Length: 337
Image (cartoon, rainbow, N blue to C red; front, top):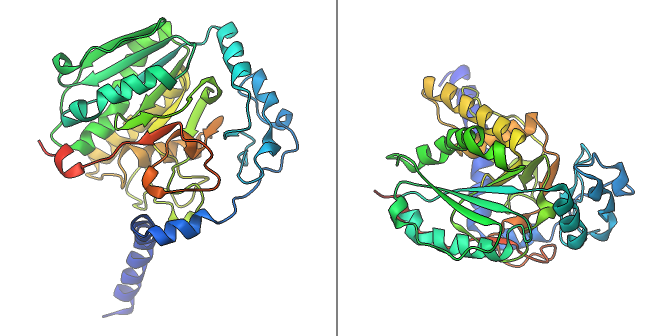
């Protein structure tokens, strides 16, 4: 083997190293337990008044109340944790401002029967209490969506979408679908948009403290690990390619003002189209493109893993409450036609 070939092989193994580390971390409970004990970085701001405020209420955030976690980003956006905020203060402010929220969720194929009813019923109990909310459910089987009892100021909109043969395409094409419904409808009636995966269950308040211009979520598996574990796309041919980043974000939850969410989904969709023309597929599909976008366009608000936690991870001393949890998954059954 020549020197050039050996160097090529070495580079190939180095590129695979972050993914191998990630797999080892996910499948090994003892490693997850030890990593959970590692201390997090700390916010260097003395008060929330030094933040780049999403709204006036953010000045009331108590950044020092959670000395066990990172409560702000390097660009001075808040990271929201239990104990930092007064929920009543946020609710009053958003009611006075006339805030309203559109929630988008995709329930395609077997995901509809497995998860949608539980997702919607739990959201009625915990998602944005006291605010007007519209649920936009995208499904290939609208006739199978069961009726749920909605509280006042809530409405359900069911929209039929095409079922793609591969779940990866369903995941990636949601970006265009979300952008289209924002343009045609949501922007005329709602101030904010939150986009969710359906295989989740609300377990605690997911309220107005989560609202901001551009909202990202720290991934439960990566919020407390070294960046070497982050699984950014490492293929230079992909539009999602990243050599480094700030955090690793989870595409199961993202949101913001309708303008910001539309900009994000438009950009991700265009990047996906470029990749398709090049016969390239990003490592984690739309999540890889979302991470690239949020690295280039910093979110104004970051949600802690409380807002989307996987119970399989087990106990973490810094997770005082879970607001949304991953539902049990059987991908072998769910992702077959």
